Image (cartoon, rainbow, N blue to C red; front, side, top):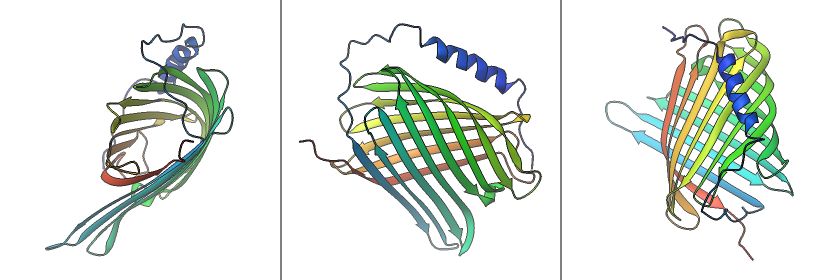
Length: 260
């Protein structure tokens, strides 16, 4: 199978982005006529489930399940996230991926936080037996209002990736990305997250992941969520394609403590 490669150095692009982010430290805060949003709850969690089944000439089932828990001690934000995607066709397993992420953020001031994160990923149908990565860096809040938020971050880390074919990857990494949230109303919001990760040992080995989601509240607890995730590896495992997509419509239950 062919793999699409692009020209140019992603490390140079990352350094330019990092310089722009660091410039935010000395730039004036983004002005906004809107009031700042109310403080978030100290604890919150959510769980989501999506299932698709077909019968007839062939029997296909796809299950997507995920959960997220966030806690906010004083000047900290700690997040745990889990996701599973599993699919079968005529009782034959055709797709399966596991994702776990942990992230801790320490607030430095209203616009800057330090963060550390760990991520585990497994997708044998993409040639990845296991992937473990750690990253540390700085996060910058560019926009924060009651209607929208935009954060960017950049960091350095280490990746250990065990592949089903070809050479394994064990190298230092550089990363960057942004997270955006737009609140249309009290019952609907759009989120978009883009991540770039590059490998120091191989300039052609860089990865991009983008997740965009639209969530609509049904009740104070339950919501419907449409999401699309695209993952691209510029240097994939030999014999596997470099791009995977996951699209789902999920039923979400969110849990937050009542405000006293």
